Length: 273
Image (tube, rainbow, N blue to C red; front, top):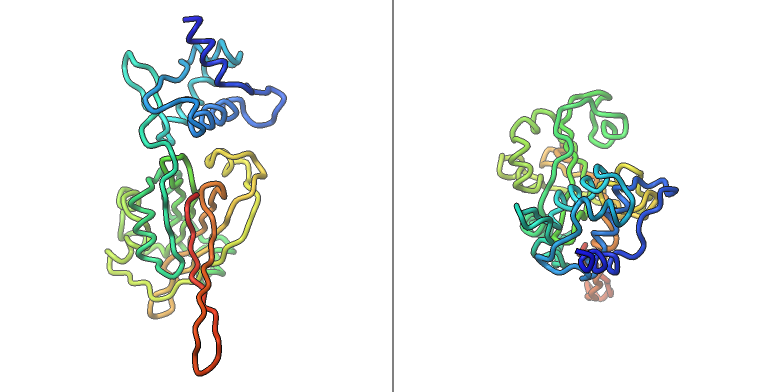
């Protein structure tokens, strides 16, 4: 038992800091997650038990349990009776592509290589910024869904989407969990013909930081997409906040000649790292 504790102690250098404003459970979760990612704990290897974490870091049993629960929620570990908490399979990087110009194909790719955990799914009144973007009156009923998209490495994106309420009633939360929104809308007969995306950098708010496993104030890649149908109606307004260590913006330029003029054309892609 002592040898096992010494082994854990040698791999979990850094510990937790009670003076740090970040909750202790999240500090512990981050430490364990990072040790999984860097290979200190291999696939199917047993992590410290709740009591061992209590003894190693001087935290409460509740704090230790919540840290392990967060790892399990992100698919990084699994629990087995009499075997403890163990590292799940495929916790290393797996490529994910999302081309801006190949929207449907690449959103489908995201759906196949990531999983979704819902935080919210309900009708609500459109706040001012959403109403303005969607061309609606303030307070018009819309469906709001908030979810975390996760790769085998852990949480990748915090996604918030708004659709008109009549469209939102066409599908269930379970269906949205199984398919990316734009693909689901297509299946329900709501056809997208135009999409506009903008990308910028923002700082992570504390709540979002917790869900994405980063420190408050950490930089995030923010993608805003507005999708319209053939009548010009906004059928989807989505904001996705990505961890930049798991998602990156890349641009490939190709040169062509049109009527004697030399033109550069861009193919924009978003890729996991």
